[in-house]
Length: 560
Ligand code: AHR
Image (cartoon, rainbow, N blue to C red; front, side):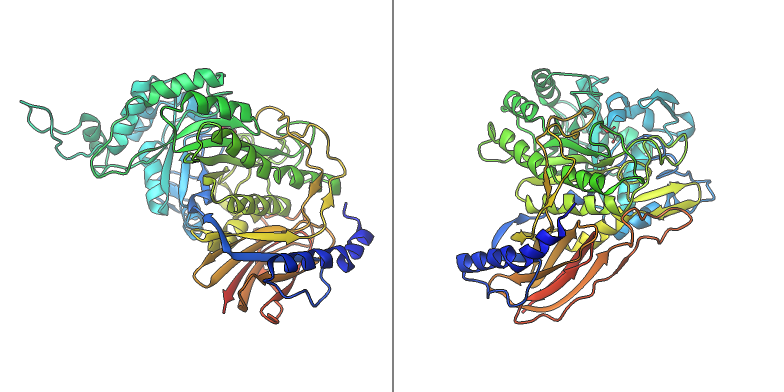
């Protein structure tokens, strides 16, 4: 719980001192003229890197109601669809310009045979699949590619290296990427058409899918085969020794299976073992459990104040996960060519808000989850030099979803609004930004925090939560500043200054609700919705802005 009297004291003293210290250090800011709770300083002369739009990536797994009902309703469905794909899902993904989608899992991918998901739909085999479910394979490779095409997203395929041999991996690449036009063969052979490309053409797609992103295994330390890092490194070398390449196509971007949360030992050992053939990206999965003692527990809807702050503090531990992974990757990759792909992240609660029995791992999503999303995306942006991609787990009918759907019912979650509000950052240049605000103590922090993924992570305590956090990025004269105020009861007034520049105009959007437990459901789809931010007039080139309690704000600032 924040200590109010301490905050008032800080308002009058420490933060003014902090602002003064910053001002004298940089000589770029005028001293704060008004009493404020916080200061935000953006440094345009200190670019970090371009924010890869792919950090706004998505993840869809054959799990519960994600694919069947969430994405795929079938061509004959009464639910509005495009070629069998739920139209509301497509519209939503288009609205946020979803850049990349990871599929088909997750743990499901570790026992998925892509050949089951091609050819005439009525001839595809039904299989028992991971997550103790049956899969008709009605949604397969072509349906996924169609989904991506309609959205304008790039496909990111997770290859099964637990149950399929290396040959099936490179033939999957061949099926997706080989041209179906005649290719030159060796001496004494007439040019011919690649047989897998011909099969793809027969299945309706003469044009190659041009899939660049390939995950070589998923969670191989767990559902992907319970391997050691040394064993996985050996598998990586074997699976990647040769993969077909096609003229005119960009090189493949292979992604190695990374650690469970903060297990940097895994990252360092795998990187060492694959140094001769480094990946484009190194994946990491980090979920925030809803319970401080157990993984995948706690309630999406019922939580008290200490639990609220604790969850957000553990979510903010993402910053350490990135730094630890980066350092571990750097032990081998001294030039830091290999980037981080955080291809599963989000809140993971217990089973008390599932949409229904067949909607395994579905959960409700409140304002608290919107704040978690804002904190997480801001962390990614502040580490734009390290992050190649991130994929929220999972887009619809699952853990940290943007959408919930059941039959003809559909709603957007508060997290969707964060993705929409933060779009201004995509492709912008991330700028170093300092937030000076008094931190909030996490009164229930404990030595071993539950984080990571399917095991309790041994991560250091997140004893405090930043009183204000965010990120800034620049495109021309337009600066996007996103700010999370996690204080449950206190608005935070902040001075915002852009070093060496003058603020000419500001517009903005805020996501806030009377109660942080607020959420959207099918009967109340607009309980949580964005509204225009109440913006003060820029004064002397700076802005004084009040961030409401438990809110996420995105400001679009025009620089003079
Ligand atoms: O997103 C749910 C599951 O979490 C994924 O299948 C797996 O990769 C992770 O354990």
